[in-house]
Amino acid sequence: MMKVLVAENRGFCFGVQDAVELALRTASERTRGTVYALGPIIHNPQEVGRLEDAGVNQSTQLDQVPPGSTLLIRSHGVRPEVIEEARRRGLQVVDATCKLVKRAQQIVQELHDDGYQVVMIGDANHPEVMGVVGYADEVIVINSPDEAAQRVPDRARLGVVAQTTHAPEYVAKVVAAIVARPFREVKIVSTLCNEVSRRQSAAVDLCGRVDVMFIIGGLHSANTRQLARLCEEQGVTTWHLETWDQFRPEMVVGKTTAGVAAGTSTPERIVQDFVKRLEQINPASA
Image 1 (cartoon, one colour):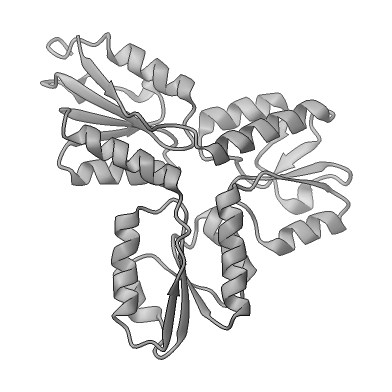
Image 2 (spheres, rainbow, N blue to C red):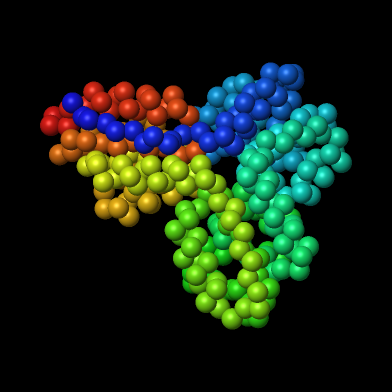
């Protein structure tokens, strides 16, 4: 049978756990069908389905939310004007923004108010980044050393933050490219999530002890994709799957020891189901 090692740090972080619990509590306290969110509460389709079954509509636009309903701000946060508009429309706002994302929002606003040109290292299309940049004017979003060289202005007072789910090593590379530019002043404030970093370290640690890695979690989850990328960089065969349904026996042919890690939006029940089933596989006959 397959030997399976599981990352010590895995699955839900406190921000995701809090958001899910708040969403379920909000749905239970209000009439079914009156709780809405602007997109998925977290990036995990299975958990999104569970929340929708509980009465949280997670695929709507603000102008489609009926007056008198409750708007749940998801863990990634939103631009401040979204909350203002929601209240203007008479919606009750329940804020499930991760407290670390809230901190990033506040830091961006403070840097801007102090006269810095804010630079955010992150994916411009990620909902967290889209929300954070709303707290200052003309935030420059970059996601690579090349973009830093091309888009960061010369002789500026720069205030630098990063998407909370980015890997510290990658952020360091982009920061190095920023400080290599001519600048007047650079203030770097760490906004990285330690919970994400712990899961990255745990996954990388497993790579040296296994023949194959399985990263469990939403395919659209940035931090889960990051886990898979980091493991691939260690030279170990890595598969990013959402659930056991995506597993194929050929993934473990010739392997004897498998590692399992999970992103911060992956429920523990999905991890345990995967591990239990994987332990029953005989790689010799897979």
